[in-house]
Length: 474
Image (cartoon, rainbow, N blue to C red):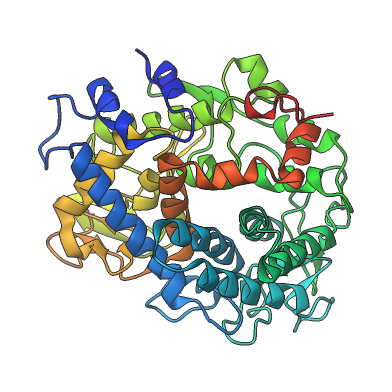
């Protein structure tokens, strides 16, 4: 069975009972690099229990309880990331279902968060929180005002809205007044977003806007993390972009082959994961994917396999890469410097969008656990053993209070003989780990969002058909 055909076994909600079957296909074969053996199904389940719980508490314990703002990173003091807030809003219902918190605790946290975003200052001044329904990329953790001179961000607003609409769909009790408030606030926040205003070169959407200089010169075109952005922009009942925006977006896709996997290219794995946190693309197709005979879920699976094969081959001869230690995505790194290690000149980076594809290779030996964590629904048979091997190999240096620290680099031995390990956790990397584990195990987020009218409308206007969308489009 090929990897692409095997992916059809993962119809959500996926279950750990499939894990051993997948092991027979790939990850649990006897042909492995040296390292800890892959987990059996019981070990995998216990490991995922621990990983989900620890990752959840990043959002629950570190969020400002007076306004719902989630820190961009911790323990280094930081501003809030609105995308991290979107992941936090996604984590709270998961915490309810897993028994970490009560439903009422989650309701109160969500109401606080949504009320802040609905009432926060929205105007063109530099002291505002947002404008035209959008929000600034980073906000002051306490005041909620724009942090320094960051942009009004369309993609980060979209990731925030993913969490907002998930809460709208999850908190659906018609008899509970707090849940009714959640649904109303979520509706108001989403309907206020003026996608048409943020389309200075219609029908596509610009990346950002500054009050000092206006719109950025770049628009969202070509495959990356912004699928969710266009689904939301097309689904708006108040300020939607034209349906031609989707074909403009797909017109600059790049299709190719990398390490035996033919798919839509984007080098960092976060681009193959973020939109999938909230939208179940398994079995539904837009015109582009219909023409290529797969869907975006299978595409992400192939991209995951390609990265694993790249790490196994290890053309850059980085320390620690093998068939169970892999994963390149945007993450922290050792720093911006050039160092001679073992007689080889190596260039390293701090925060950087690392990745490997036929489109480009950006690799400095830094591995981000979120790369494998966010790919668990697509390829559990290689993603779960990868995370397990990382924990078993590197222990508390990598896996601690809130699960996986953001990144590590075994090649960079200037810090220690074992390599460089980040001290921080990043909200935008923690979020995909907990959400995608839960989507793999129960389909919680996907199932709730299948009934969200705005998500459905956006997908239908983009031309998606088939699968769970059958009968839902006009």
